[in-house]
Amino acid sequence: MRRLQTVVITGTLAVATLVVGCAGQKPQQGGPLARTDTPIQEVKDLPKWVTEKGAAFSGERRVLYGVGNSAGIYNPALRRKAAEGQSRNDLAATLQVYVAGLQKQYMAETTAGSMDKSSVEQHIQDTFKQVTEATLVGAQVVQYWENPLRNEAYALARLDIEQFMDIMKSYAAASGQFKELDANLREFVRKNADKAHDELNQELERRKHGAS
Image 1 (cartoon, one colour):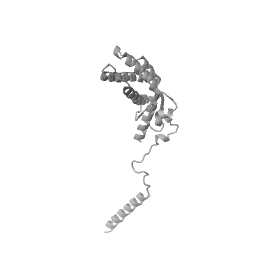
Image 2 (cartoon, helix red, strand yellow):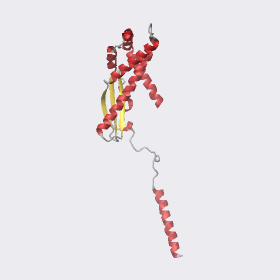
Image 3 (cartoon, helix red, strand yellow):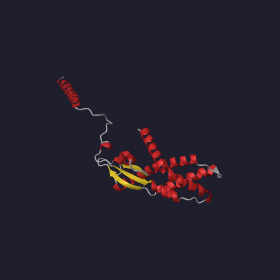
Image 4 (cartoon, helix red, strand yellow):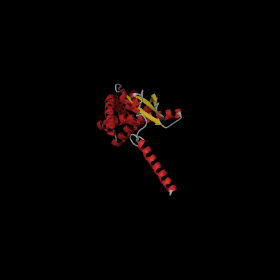
């Protein structure tokens, strides 16, 4: 009987100790999914373009930007290469929106004349596609930043629309039947480049608010 009492008392003390110990612990703030790292917006010396992209350079005209990032890559060279590649992809997407606006406006204002309408539309699409691809070759990565608090890097790619304009000026179709059409297209792009840039900024702003 004495042995049984000892076991019961010992067990009771153990439970009491456990309860007291648990009661003395502070609960985790925010639960198990609480964020433990520093938000990117609060990192010291954060470049504005990391979060604002082209909006950080709103005073510049006829310039497009793309921002890319990479995370979890421990090799410094590969981390930088991945971030730069993503910035070029982002810039390409922005340029495509810009060109799509020009193309849509031009096709709405032009007529096929004596040529087949579908052939004209296909030629315009092919022209813009080739000029876009040639323009992206000249895109440059101008800034690179690594987050000092975690394994993450960002790159900024820049493209002057003048490069697009220069390539557009020199473009000529292999077929002579589109000679006049190409001349009209070049003149249209020259006159509407700034307007298309303003419309691009408006479209990107709408997308940003739509995603938030």
